[in-house]
Image (cartoon, rainbow, N blue to C red; front, top):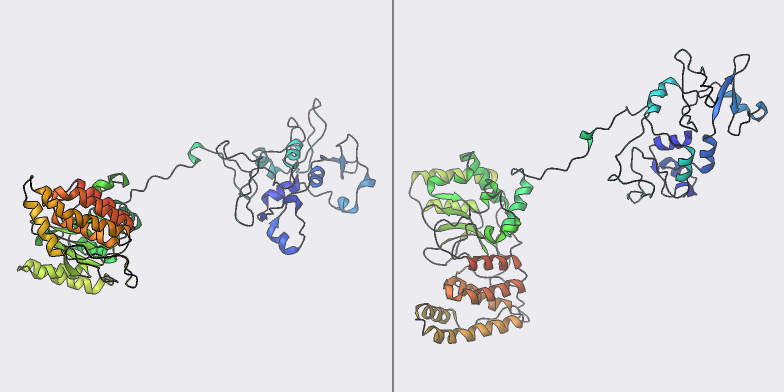
Length: 508
């Protein structure tokens, strides 16, 4: 038993081969511990008693089989260690009483005559800790030693692990869900009584709206785009210096307001999650905003707004752009920096407030802003009606990826205008002119020229005629899925299902 408890207290890593391990080199034994063998357990479980002879010397007797051991069976080593105390002795039957004397540690107190006459001497410093330990009987040890390849199932203060880091599982060890965890108490560990408050509680849900990583993930989930660029958060920090309580309102003096993903930073969209995607992708999305356009700054007195333009949803923005949906569908390119775009817009205002704010933006930009947008890495295949252009994979050698529409931009404009102005009786005649163009775009998509259907769908979207929303949706959803941009497909479906004009495009 002493070797078994010594094995439990050993801090080395349990050997995954258990008692079957054949390695005896010093490097292996210094790093890994091995459980005691069956012979060690049987030898340790023999009860040893101490009695004094007529001269007061302590003598040992083996009473396992009811026979006293003779002095002839003792070795010189055993005789030399007679006076040493045994650290841990386990009784064979739980009804036997362990007793000590306060005056003499090795003094033996006789046990009641009705019980066995076997006596046990346990050091007093161990008595209190022993009463709180789970004492294993011989039967328990025999059960644990059935399989030599399994580490004894006595709960320990650590979880045995193999060399590859995985936990050593044993059919003898009950799971933590079945029984309450308990530990052995030794000299190095203070006794502890388990309490109901010590049970592990589940972690509370993350609700800290100031966590940077959480906010970045939240914006990506709600708007189906990649992480916002660093300058996006730099502008938020600048606005916090101007108005610490409500940074989103720091630009109200010049008629602008931080909107869209900035509402996530302001904590206005905490109640939304991924189940509300059809709503959140429409947050501050104006009538002529394609899926590539994401509004982040809105005018308080008009439909003018500034945002980022992405060619691919899960990529960084390429430009800072603007649009006024009350005038047309044209998307103006403002540059590669949000701060530069704001200063450019403020220059057009003839007011002292705008001039002062412009100077502050410039000073903060020089000190803090270190990164700007990279721009497009390839040229657009065509400009489309909104003039921002579209980018699709195109192989110039094989001429696969895009082919021009069957009609020119001017002719298409003319046909769409006539369809918009035609009466109900004459719309079918105009549709007969549009149908060949649509068929040609569908054939191009079938032949891997995905940019053709993409261009026609954007042109229909920029025309803004609600009667063409069904065809526009079919063209764009197909094109975005073929181009592996399903996020944009989700956005355009939600937008065409709930497309409206106005100043306030907020869903809050």
